[in-house]
Image (cartoon, rainbow, N blue to C red; front, side, top):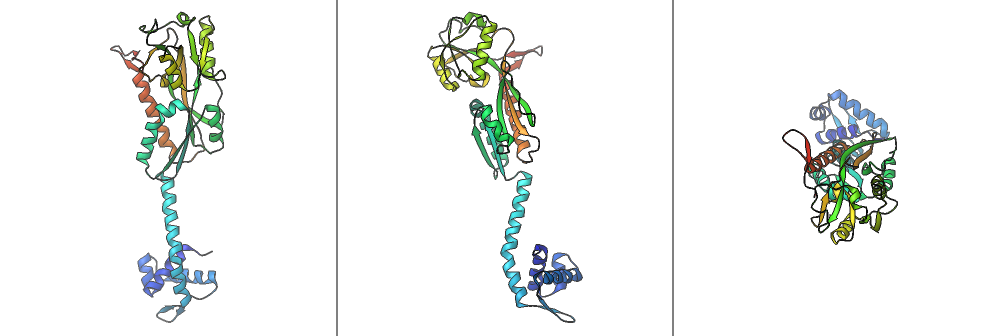
Length: 316
């Protein structure tokens, strides 16, 4: 196989007409240049120079090889620059997956930060429920996945994945604006035992969490509508068709009244999954952006009073 170092030296020898001058340009001794050209001649099996006592003369083959190698060496230089950029995280592909609510509230800021910091990188985002995206992380098709887990419906994540918690979303009541308890600062769930309820599909963690919350309050919720789209749920609540339990990221709607529950606060926990062996240089920066974005959201939900205690802000 032709050695690119030898080909670069050959180009200088042909251009300058001298081993000594080529060595001066490239930082080699004349002897080192001569040795490289001998090795190149041995590789191709033909002489490249006519050697005399005080000078050398390139052959037609040397001139042709020097000319034809320029394009190949240029492509190799380009490949080397591209690889260095990928290793540095300036280029390359970042593949993320997340669930719908995080895609609406968390990922836009994160993606904008990654693109601004690494404008030559390609960033891809897919959407799916946790069980739909875990496989992509395991087989390397996805660099990281943002998922969720309810306190009232715990689950086990694959042990070969790194799991980091980004955000603990409180589960909150969504009430119609004209609801009898819309003006309350907190609501005991037992006061809503006779309400019509709206929630996610029956086979979801959100639906199971509602049933378990209601069971702890000694009632079975009368569920009248189901949707996995929180925008649809909020719209139904806003129209007075029922009450719902929403995770914090899904509460951004001025048409409904968002009220905390009394007692111990249940949460939905947002987490990021990735492989420890993932060497994508874009991943650490992205994980940092995710953590900062979620931290900012959490700070918006709570503030400290004069004694240093955390208090709830008005939910939005």
